[in-house]
Image 1 (tube, one colour):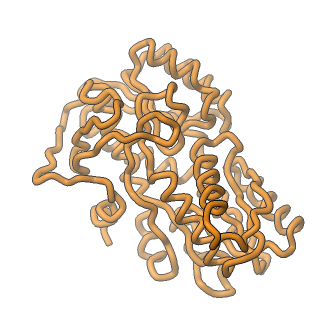
Image 2 (cartoon, rainbow, N blue to C red):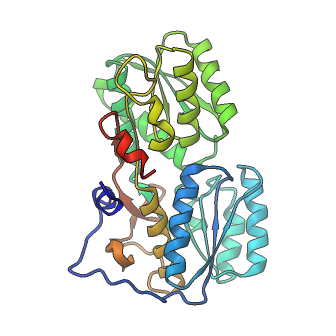
Amino acid sequence: MNKKVLSAILCGTMIVGAACPVFAGTADGKKIALVGKSAGNAFFEIAAASFKEAAEAEGATVDVVYPETATADAQIKVLDNLISQQPDAICIAANDVNALQAKLEEAMAEGIKVSSFDSAPNKDSRQVFVNQAGTVAVGQALMDAVLDIAGGEGQWAILSATSQAANQNAWIDAMKTIMEGDEKYSGLELVEVAYGDDEPQKSTDQTAALLEKYPDLKVICAPTTVGIAAAAKYLQDNGSACKLTGLGLPSEMIEYTGADDEHSCPYFYLWDMQGLGKLSAYATIALVNDEITGALDETFTASDLGEYTITEADDGGTEIVLGLPLQFNSDNIEEMAKLY
C-alpha cells in the first residue's frame, strides 16, 4: 500500500472534487513557526517533516521549534520569543489546554494567525484545530480494543503522556464515557490512569509500577506513541501476561505486535501522520491568506488532499478532522512499518 492509498483510506471526512488543484506559490514569503510538545517525539517529527515540506512547496518558510521540556512553561517561553519575531502564523501542539491562552491570545492580537494540531489549546487560544481523528472515534476504538483483549472482563489501566495533554485527556474522557454508558463494558475495571510524561524511562517505570500494584492487571492502554513503545518493551522483556494496546508507530511496535503469547501487543491504532502534517500546513496557509478564519462550516481546498469543511470541536471551538483511526496488527504491521 503506498502513501497516497493510505491517506485516502484514513481521510474518511475528505470530499474529493473532480479536480484538486495544487496552488503552488500561494504562501510566497510567508513565515510559519511550528511548535512541538518536546524534542525526540517520533510522531511529531514525522508530521513536522510533512508540514514543512508541504508549506515550503507553497513558498513559505517554516521554523520548527521545540521547548526545552514537555511543559506549558517551556512552551510559553518559546511563544514569547516567537511573538517578538512576528511570524505570519504559529501552529502548535499544546502541552496544556489552558496555560498557553494568554500568550496565544497575545499572538493573535499582534496579527499572527494561530492554528494547532495533535493536541489543542482551548477554543479561545486558537483559530482552528487540525484533529487527527474524531475524539469519540479514537475513544471507541481504544475502548473496544481493551474489551476484546481483556476477554470482556478484568482490570485495566491507562498509561498516558502528561496530565495536562489535551488530546490524551480528551481520549481518556471519551473512553470513560463510553465504558460507563454501555452495559457491555460492565465487566471491566479501570484501576488507574498513570502518566509517563512522554519520557521513555518514566513510561517504563510507570508500567512496572502498575504491574506491581495490580498483579491481576489484564490490559494497559497507552494512547501515546512514547508510552506504548516503552510499555511494549517492558511487558515483552519480562514475559508479562498483561497485554497492551493504544496509539503507536508501526516502526516502533513491529517486534511487539502479534496475537500470541510471545508478543505484548495484539494490535494498536494510529492514523496518517504525514497526512496530518500536510493538512495542518494547508490549513495554516489558508488562515494566513484569509481564505478561512476558522469559523464553523467554512470550506477550503487543501491542495492535493481535496476539500475540507471546518466543524465544531468537542470544546466548542472549531476543528478540521483528518479521518478515522487505523488498526495495526500482525497482518499489516510489516507493511505499515515501512511507511511509519
